[in-house]
Image (cartoon, rainbow, N blue to C red; front, side):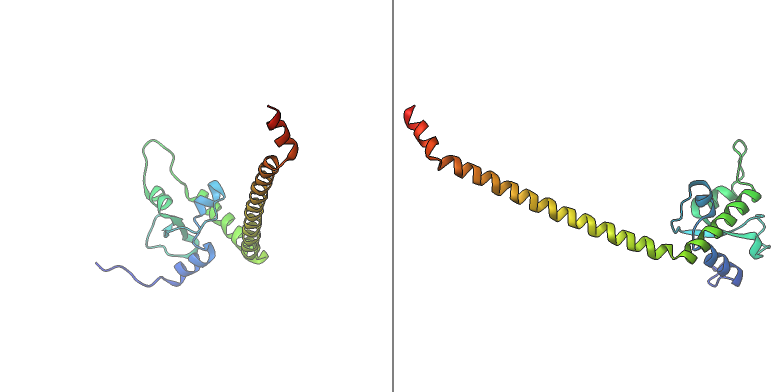
Length: 152
């Protein structure tokens, strides 16, 4: 059996809307990281590929979603759909506000500040070393010190 290479228009829509972010990761942990994952069928029926029945899940959560457990409570459809809706709203807001650009700018600012303070610490260390060397040489060349040494 050959693997299917082309995604359907509905799968493409889900990938775009989710930004390849797992709705369970987001719903449970507010994790907005891009993940490796798959398109899951909410009703667990692969024949139903309507957009309303598809969701992007990371590999771990897709495996958990498709697994039937005898003891622990598995994920339910309404829960997944609710998290998916929250994720889509967050992503739309994220994109609308340009938060990604802001986040990148903040990262650049923080990195610049870290570099500045690292360089400042190096300069302080250099000045401290120079001051200590100056004090040592001053003690050795101090005439009062030499007189005290001679009296002993």
